[in-house]
Image (cartoon, rainbow, N blue to C red; front, top):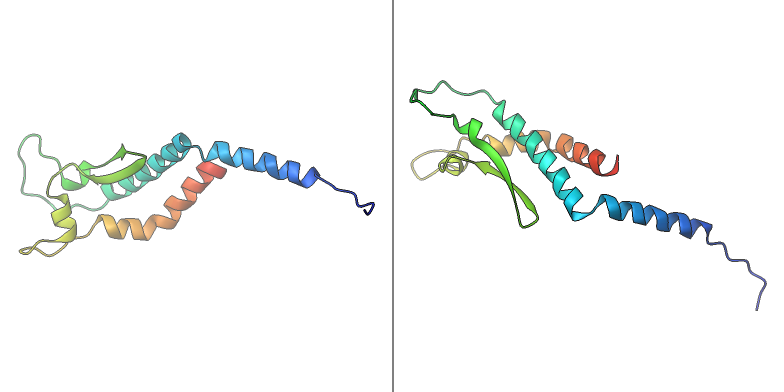
Length: 122
């Protein structure tokens, strides 16, 4: 056998780093961070310009005002409170798509991801 010395200081530090990472990536914490990203996305969608509506009925809300999120089975889902939201976004046989959520997300996704990473690891 050789007289080789074994140093474990680096591994101890790495083990502590992994423990800290495990705490930060706990399911509850990750879900909370995903919710914060969804809220930020929803704020951006709700801030989009709205075409003037002819709907003046009491209690009427614009499609963009109804964009919301919910958590379900460890996921955070964003969508509309109005049933016709997906029809406006994706179009129908009789109507062309008027995308608003997809372009907003694509335009700002790096900011959303960056902010969520900061909340987890920052």
